[in-house]
Length: 147
Image 1 (spheres, rainbow, N blue to C red):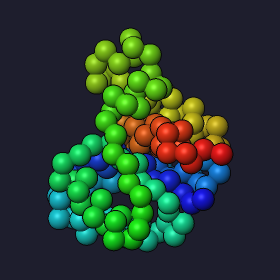
Image 2: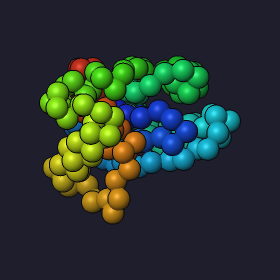
Image 3: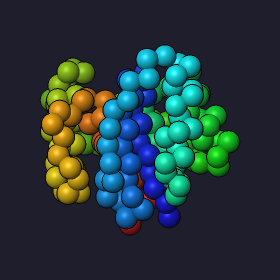
């Protein structure tokens, strides 16, 4: 079994890597600024994760296609989900009333995951990074990677 990379797609991308044992290894945000810079930056990110098994990403469109093509070239499985899929799993209905509410509650849960994993605490946790952490948890549970 290898690592799982979770991605909240966008030019401002949230990333979270889960180790083969299901623990959060690292999390971060990256502002690519343009589709071309994103396209050039993806290989560098993937090269830093030699045991990557799968990428779970929230979102679609041409930004997803860029990642899917690079993952396919490397033989990495990809799964695309919507925000509603992981939110339904982890948030109560009242916590999902608006995007703002969902992002706030995802941040609260992500901080608990960070604490549980004994990862370094963030000084500020961007919503895209918090959502990447939650996307990763969804991936561990639904892609058969949780041990």
